Length: 366
Image (tube, rainbow, N blue to C red; front, side, top):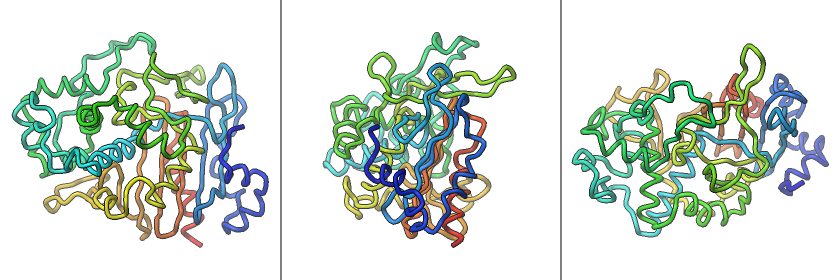
């Protein structure tokens, strides 16, 4: 098995590591009891404390054909947890001096309609651009089977937005979560770097960090190793619901990764392997908006570049969730406590976010 050294050590010395972390592994395991199965989809959970993987376990199976068990090198579609990688790609171009956060959309794409003059790269990163939702602009799939659904890509999203005449609101005046913005950012990376988005990610992030199995999945161009397929629970039982008309958009949610590789990602963030602490600061600074004009779950939104930044029970955190057909994902990073929890699920009847917070409470309450 191609498991990360720290996770192998965990499996060998489970009780000792659990004691060091001061949380009984059985309590974490109990949170995921409903995912335990030899014949149903499930998920994987990782806890990193003080720089060490102190709990890593898979539950359920990757798909209903092979019934392969989920483990730490199973690759899940990250859905919107992908946005932190898209944001990092943009930030690396800023680091290179090839892009600025204040650059306008029309600076990068001169043929973009005039309304793009008011939209900056920063607006796209922190969801304050006001761009139309590309899902609302697409043609309906009319119930086509997954293998026959026409899938839009990032370039197609950009084309749809070029056909519009304005935004939902004046850029920078409101916060509204925007998948369109992150699809456009993927195209910004391509235009500025001169490389395909997936290639740029591989060369500048995944390859450098030795995230060997993490990829931006493009059907017909590459394959996801150790792949988990998405599922939904239907009246007749589990059904594979792995792809939809939006599943080929990379910038907003098309990256696949595993607990093994995300351990490396967390370590890179903790030790500033890609960008200095000062260069990361903009990503961890919430967007500034007019008072009372930034709702998210009935409270002011606090969002940087690819990360939600609101606290949880008084503990500062950077976090994100992902929801797409067949998958639910979440990452919680409590930097002051040196605690990271990652939950990846290949079924859509659970909340990865809620599960990750239940695990967090075991540590934060001590």
